[in-house]
Image 1: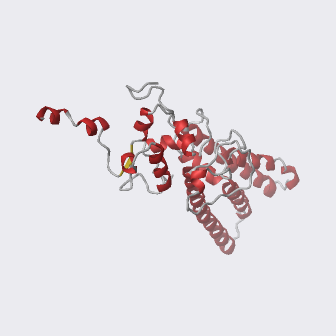
Image 2 (image 1 turned 180 degrees about the horizontal axis):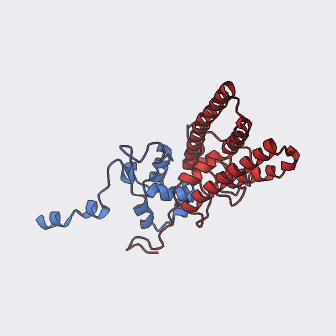
Image 3 (image 1 turned 135 degrees about the horizontal axis):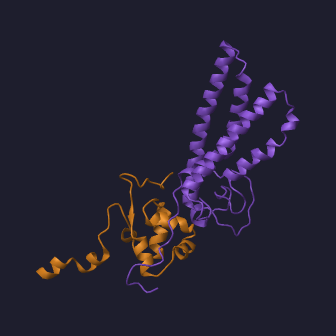
Length: 186
Length: 95
């Protein structure tokens, strides 16, 4: 499921995820602070939109050369014959000469979407529950701040979590050994 | 991460001889992947036992090597091919 980039090791991928989500959290905090406490106009924060898109693009995979191959690529003939429920999400179009998805890619794609959905479901439930409880019982001043940060992060996670899970969990591809088994002519 | 139709961690682990068969025929992973219409990374995962193929792919691999499926895949570890063909040294000495 990973693109062919030997330099992007698992350690680097994990650092990239941590950096992206940390930056998203920081940006959300600053944005909400400015909006709520400094009364900055929403239009002045227009630069946030490209930043938000950049997180989604970096974690979600680029059209070419991105860390994760998009889920919407064409399916290999062997995999297409599988009687599996296939969740081919996404609507991006790609040239037909790009690498297709085989049965392992599809299995991983389905698995990470299912896992991401479970995580988001729990996170959304806890987030809404916390907001509801805070609003009902205390009406604290920081409630809009937390609501803003949480909404921003939930949005980023909803758009990029499946790819983030792949980047974090997928093992590094092992290169083919140059020397074949002894005795076999090269 | 899923390891395939059945997990390779635990009782569902499937052993295979893909690496040996591929080496015997001087095929690269990319050659085999092209022939089977899968990603070459998947061949690596199959060889290391990190991914168990679907039944259709397993039959396709066996057909490609022109072997019965039980010669390529087994739920139990394979004995070395040389031992299977020639027996071990003790057996030959007894004969």
